[in-house]
Length: 302
Ligand SMILES: [Zn+2]
Image (cartoon, rainbow, N blue to C red; front, side, top):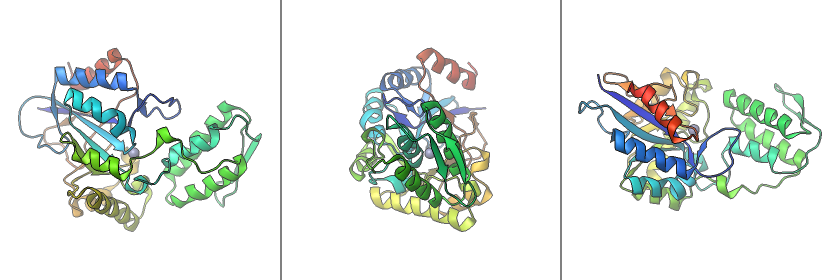
């Protein structure tokens, strides 16, 4: 039976990214693309995978960071590897960092912070110690987890406002973390190697949303991306992507909105006959080539 290994990347960038590990350095990414190109057939996410007998690898990106255009695209062109990028449309051209990066920004850019932070909230009121970097990293991870599981994403903006005032930090995003601008998005879409798919509007966990909210997040992100690039959008990936972060409504709404394939973050290979609406993907860290080869070989069984 044919196997397809779908790789999941977020960022190609040399930024220091020790909290969420989303960035792969350009050097490592180029090594990884060269390796898969030399060893396997490379398919596009939207190709018909039932065709052909040989096992294959597929490259995907989630979120829509500007570095996908700045650093990843030239490497994909050089190595001639196609990729699909799933975009959270609410962040396109926003000049704002993704909400998880915003938490990091608010709690790490200053040299000194007050000793304690008290969150004022009906449900989650609590006081954390914040006098050391390590303690603030713990707070970052806690807030990230709470906001990931919380059905009302607007809460994030209230909490960020509290953090901003408490830390006395302005609204200026860190340039290296920006999502794509409209021009960058169009340039990606114009590349013969790139396909764009949707990834909700606000990057929220769909599994905890009502059907109505899911319809908004899925339907609007598809229509919006469609308008930006003037091409019909037929692929989708679920934010966070593991089993708790989507449900049968999610798959249903995707189908009703013209989506032909959707992706999870469940770590395994896709095999002939498996669902096209829950395509598993393996997230890749910034690792040495040796470790990348070990990881890919394990999934491909060679
Ligand atoms: Zn994502």
